[in-house]
Image (cartoon, rainbow, N blue to C red; front, side):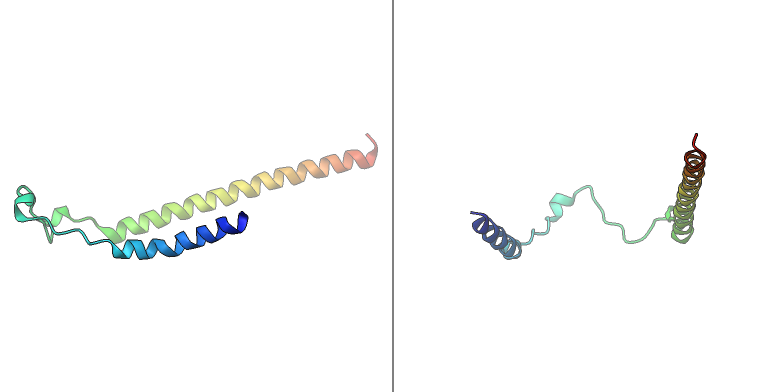
Amino acid sequence: MKRAACLLFVALMLAAPLYAQSQTPPSRPSSSAQDGFVPVDKPLSAQDTIPAPRLVAIAYGFIWVVIFGYVWSVRSRLARVEREIETVTRRIGSGG
C-alpha cells in the first residue's frame, strides 16, 4: 500500500508540468475591455519616481542593524547564563 501511494505521488508530480504546459495561454483582452485603462511606460513627472538606490541602501542598513542587535542580545544573554553557571558551580564545589 505504501509503495502504491509513493508511485501515485511520483506519477502526479511528473504529470503536473505536462498538464500545466497543455493549458492554453490567456487571450489578450480586446480594446473594449480596456476602456478606462491606459498603460503607462514611463512616469508622468520626475516627482513620480522612487529613488531606488537610496531605499535599497536604507533597507540593507536596517537589516544589518537588526542582525547586529539580535547578535548582541544573544551574546549578552549567553554571558549572563555563563555567569549563573559559574555561580552554581562554585556553590556546588564549596558544598553549600
